[in-house]
Length: 148
Image 1 (cartoon, rainbow, N blue to C red):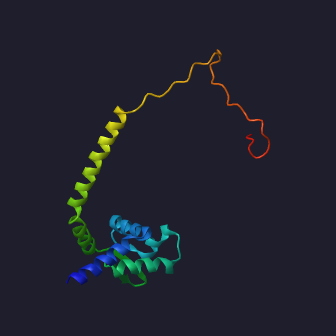
Image 2: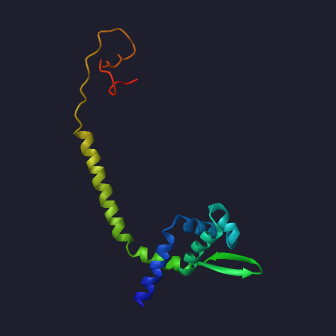
Image 3: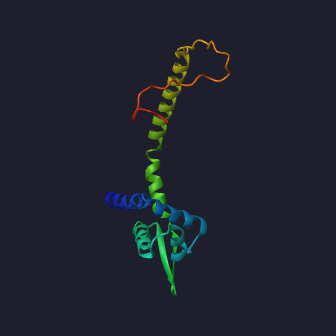
């Protein structure tokens, strides 16, 4: 049973690893059942290339295809996503604790840096009465070191 579940999770996470496939799932989540041509349109790729993405999603169980006449439509299947969410939830406490500890550490480091910050040395005031800062002096060198 564990190997079956592992293989299913591998297919689900593999399918979710691609941004095109995630966008397809997002579109199906918002629009319900959509025709393949409607799903493919915003992705700017060939239909055979797009159908490969749909096949990966279908193999993972994330979508179901239905054919009515000449129109093939897809709809979202929630069960594999629920299994993936349940798997991730087992690790939520571990990561939450680790991220909370990291946040506390970073906050302490920030506090220490503000208290231990050395005073910045001030340059002596210019003897000129000009209100704009003086320009950087140019070197007399010619060639590639010269700036324009």
